[in-house]
Length: 354
Image (cartoon, rainbow, N blue to C red; front, side):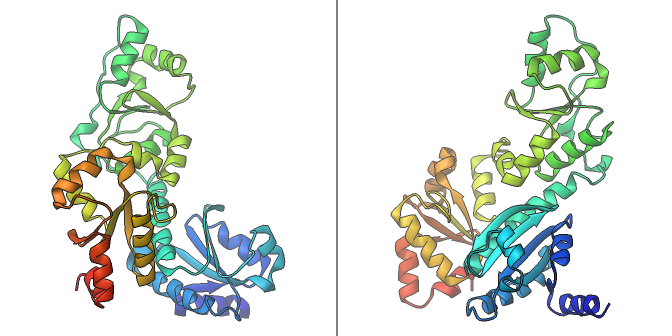
């Protein structure tokens, strides 16, 4: 009992729980919430600063649903072996008992971003199990067809599948899902702020049966994007966790609106070739090294995956090359400007928007 009370006290005071047994570890990682565990060693000089980073993150309001813990790696060799811990510090991320991410080494900025990214995924998945309220439904989520269909089956199905860029074939409709799986699918799309339409398979038995054959998918709901079958609820959840579903959903609004949203996505945004883990040009690699050295949290956008953004942003910013760095939605400059700011001792204050 005293050990339990000590653990609760430690967590209450610091927000970071120290795990004290194999059983404690196994129970902790099974939490339905996002779990972040720091494998540390007292003798390792890099571990204490990273513990402080975890404590700071644990106090952020937007991360109040995340569970943080630390465990002395050498005191639990069985756990360390199972988790393939070969050096400290190492951070493992768990969601619903499954490891979903990993960070090896001391990188405060990267750890912060990984916690926030994984927390966003956890919140999206959590929304899938929350009730869908009729007041949340947008007009675009209207049911397309409520009358029995007639004519060639394949032609009808093609028309239905392609009637809107994002189509969800489900039991019920967005306002009134008629099964738990359909309700979760609607919640996921709403959480991603997707514009989508639905078809209630209960209103047309022919469509209900024929679509299973046409798509070679035996269950509902079924999600289609631009006429292509994405899959059912399990596939949607996997793609949410990987970030792929958000990327596949059609972009909405004008290009200028999209660019404003992207440049304001985070207080510090870098538009680069590749990502922070795999930069795809030398200029991007240099910028990432500089940003990482500042220890500031930042997000990136890979211009190589979206040609519209790549070309449009050059006009939007009146800056012809990449990378480009934005602070609170305003262009700070490219690599040369960032280097000049660093040499002049003004980089941190500029990136903080001070």
